Image 1 (cartoon, rainbow, N blue to C red):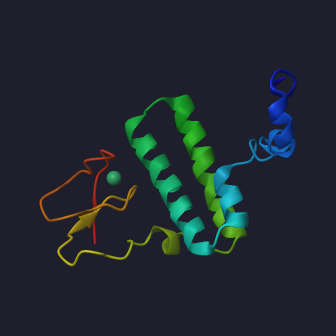
Image 2 (image 1 turned 60 degrees about the horizontal axis):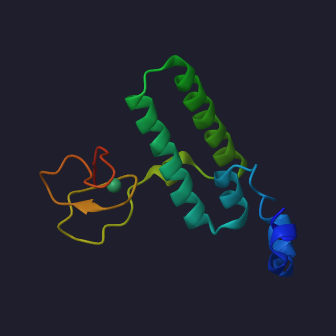
Image 3 (image 1 turned 180 degrees about the vertical axis):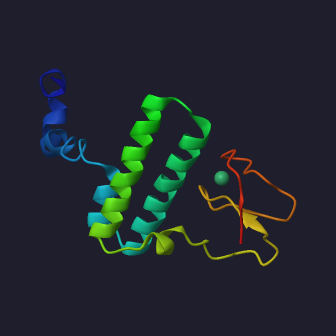
Length: 127
Ligand SMILES: [Zn+2]
């Protein structure tokens, strides 16, 4: 429809025709296929942690089943690409020597005494 109403869009017909090509794929699976291993590990770690957070916050049984399925699917993906979960879940490298803990979702570092990330409202993990 945009091609009919705005003929200038016809110049970008390939973009228009292919923009939804990967829309139905899972972005973590796409990242396993196309991104360097360190970026894939970062993405899947965050996804696994988000699922763990969602499980903690939501006691709804139907959503619980969904999160369990999603988590199990990601573990299968890790197995298929030959990456161990211990390798994915290890702490990120410390950029500030005084840092005591970090946010598992955004990797922000915190000094001793902080318990939750200011941005993500997630429980911090100790180095
Ligand atoms: Zn955070």
